[in-house]
Length: 220
Ligand code: TIU
Image (cartoon, rainbow, N blue to C red; front, side):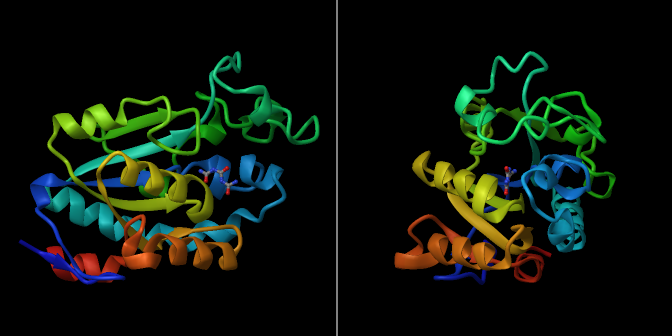
């Protein structure tokens, strides 16, 4: 079985029991005029993830690894968005308000779409989620169990928000969370670094941290 070089230790994986998760590579986070920018961030900070994610998507597709793309977003009537998530920011910049790419973080709007550069194939799963953690109010655990998956290669945005909460969720649900650091970014590089440190500290308390080159080397 392939062994991936990682911190705090290498990890041996069986490809049949491994899935790739690409988290929230949506226009709302990576393009100007979306949710990320409405929160005061520069979306260009996330662009460096695109090329390494493309290389890992190609690898997964070549090897037949199960691929899941997630999207954070809410129903048009906001019935799946708690008041605490909705009311935290000034009016006009809130989830559901109208922006240059349609209503912010609403399913079906332009901003909610995955960017073309890492677009899902029709055979791949696109998982809509109302929260940050991909296990929250989704069928993700059930889908992975049915496929016999135990290892998750985790990529996407942002490291300190939807990725780290999903890593924590994966760990609690009994999956090995293997994070590809160069395929992940935060709007703030220091938060990216800190989030990765927390995942791999204490002997890998939440999971493993590696990068796309090490995964390509192990699996190709
Ligand atoms: N704000 C921020 O960094 N991220 C999010 O709100 N969602 C995701 O990370 N997808």
